[in-house]
Image (cartoon, rainbow, N blue to C red; front, side, top):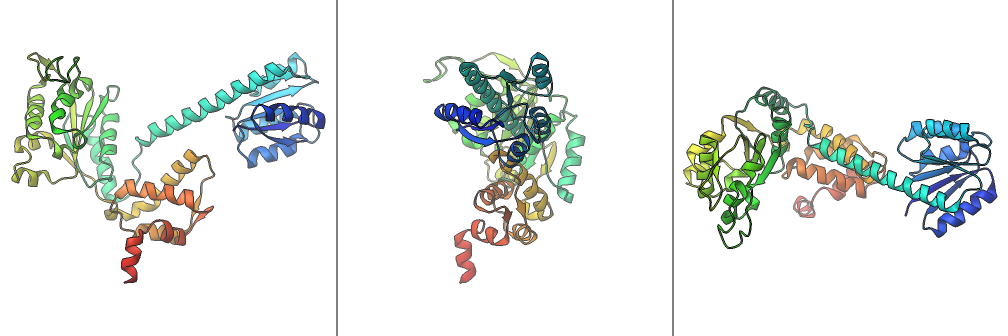
Length: 394
């Protein structure tokens, strides 16, 4: 239900608008002058504002200027019986969504308000998408291991050298791959991701190289594989240690010759792809166990980047917590919460078996369940698993 603020010094106008808009399903707040309206505007989140122009204490145009400074995304519709064309033009210039003369035409008012709601929704969605995109471009941390990774990326990214990124689950291997891609000459090209662990072994070759129609029972049409999709860009092979040996052989050939052949086809297709691979396994141990090809390992590991676990970079926890607090509170549309020093210290001392991914989930949990200030008691209640508490009490 959308929240609407009505600001008008005429009680009868406020009552009429409230009755109409309540019937239409809106939730209403009322203010009798601009000063009271601006106070409410700052304290509460509204989807739109209906504002008179001639009012005591603070007129509508002054309210409009202040409101646009405080939150430029909220549409403000000016509704006045004292205005003229010049007033309407001035209001629009100052950022008003629209200007409606009194007495307002009911149909026009409702259509204008509906359009304002659509704008609010689009602005919120655009911000959400921008945050989602920007998240992939940030690598938070000032510890020595992270600074070394950043320095390596700056040197490696402009080249076409293949990179093998290693580290535990949740440390941010994909983020390293994205940083390399975005700082490379291929940044305008696609970055295609393949999670080798999530694709059944019998389908991985079709996923990577594509297939021709009729090449197997369910191949009802031709399919373009990930190598072709990534042409001119970057192919990120996540969890490559889980790839089947037969697929490894074809990947090796693609890296050696720059050519692939679709499953069920005989035509060679040239591809220009930079490969970045990642794994949480010890690939040399996998080679010893005959689960991974040594020649493919050497092809992939021109540059090795190891991402440390969060337990190895505890100094970065405060920066990461602050970053996630920003993101989570923005996503939930609430004022950023504060975390006190004892709580932050407790988070630094926690055993982060799930690494960055776990920390992000923990911060979201604390934002949802804690008060305005996140305390050490909140960390104790909502972060430490019950089984660990039981062990500690034994």
